[in-house]
Length: 355
Length: 237
Image (cartoon, rainbow over all chains, first blue to last red):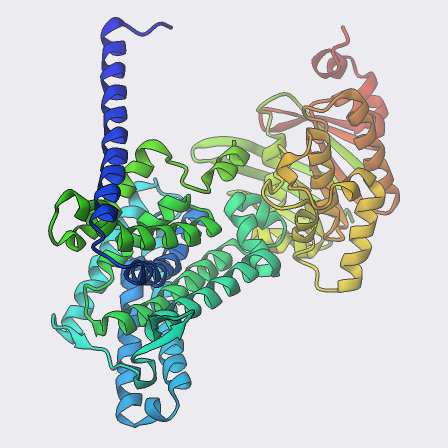
């Protein structure tokens, strides 16, 4: 069937617009970078600072993104309440950490002072995610895709305003860990201890997750369920149990990420899950939604771009306080990915094999 | 008493009445085949036995137990394993991982290893390709994965849904030879096929299914020579 002339004209216009958009973005990046470097506003130590901050921020995004991507992989559903699951974990950790700090426990034993709130946060997030799945998602299984999505948005609002109701709209100061203040000299460069600890904790947990998914019986069952639920059931796999497990693992990671986030920003509030949630969703799409290594890569790439991007691309163009545009950079990346590579960075293998 | 007894089941897809009072039985050690055209209800019958679909009426008894009270993922624990229509392999899992999923219901490591060895003996090709992603295999190899995987559960009854679909004739021969071999090792088989001639040549008995009802049942040899069967399913005028 041949397209009519006007259809082809519209096609052409869309193509020109998309190419213009690509060229504009590339031009901004090249010209901005050129002028920024020529002005020499930042030293190489400062650039390394940006990158390190990007990596630690990105590893937090990656941990949250894993929850989105695993649930999507298994249910083809975006769990919009996931950012709020992250927030509930941070609250659990806040109360634990405050109590432990007051008791003098954190100063005496900084490692356990970090670990215990993380474990509490993982437990709280897991519990709430399992309840949300049971109440808001499972009864809707088999309904059209839009229905659980709407339910997820409802669950998100419910969690936010329930926590606002219980704990008020204010921000709580997350107690700092004294042992993590200051910097470590690594290769002659001073790097904030908190950022090192955040990145290392995140990498440990992601490595653990990867091991579980790739090599354990339950992980293999998760991958089998994400491919074909009926066949998985024929193997003797209790599909509902695997789905709950997936929610629980994703939530545990989000809860731990909540603690790491609170350690960096030193505060906790009922709305804190929204922005990291959307960013992590961006990271999941960036890496290829449904793809576990993709979520890790996507999170790191987003974190580094967001941290380096404003200074590198925008300040050279004469934009003052470019740092405030870091969210704009993140969302521009989301739009670009959706337009030009909807399968994401690592999505190719997946989409080919699904076909 | 038959090993598997299906009695008067009525299965629906939404409002579509797919099985209308279907009954059949299988004795221990038999190969029974279910033949019929497209949309006759062959796959629906297997999915109902394996628990993926629940009938609104009727009963399924296996080894003296009521099978209908178990969800699909528990039926395999009772000893009934299925090779689904279109093979249903896990494309992004390796061949070995696919086989491991087949033994999900088993806990005995030695038993699992024995079954894995048996799968590789039945299908040496799979052994060569065990680290490959199953999605990269040819159709015939995928069918081998699906059958090997079903056997990993040490089943007493094996349900096979169109194992010859889309395969070259030489592979169809191989698959049917393997089915007979599996049967000789003591596994009871319910075989659903469009390739009625092949199915009837290895089966003990057969059922002819038409729009959700059994219209004819007899010894396989007799069905093969029945004029109506020949005309409708064997392409013999």
